[in-house]
Image: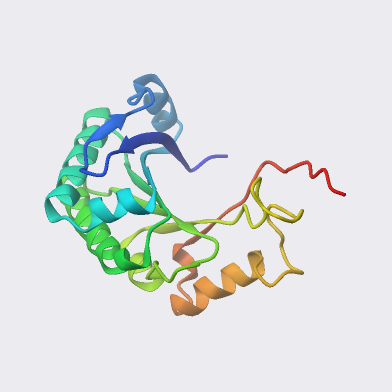
Length: 201
């Protein structure tokens, strides 16, 4: 029933080095999945505005991260890469597109058929994401359609409301479709298999 597995994760540093691979490569898992016709991608993570600013605004750091991730994927015999950058600041909007363009070029040159995806936000709070450009570069944008209300929220509410709120899944999908000029083939909706218990007064 699966088509792709994203292995979570290779943690990037702000200079493009790898700080933790969390057991990658799991060669037995990769081989078993591929034998079943399932593609396996490595997820690369970096969370934090300051760290992402350092990485994305420096050409050498960007290239270092691309080289390191490509090596991890090729060594494992995997099928591609998934990028999960969170809290991207508005100042790095263009640099994020440059990074993904360079990464896609490198991967597709060295791994024919490489699958390039990235996690993207349910709501682009700061205008940091050029959905259209990124959709054209990537094979898919994995829209994180959850945490509209989360553990730090000041009010109780659904994790992933389909409708009934201003910011909800309906808003998110229409936002992506509008900005990408209807590029629905590149939009993957991520849904949560979890919820929260809300003690309230």
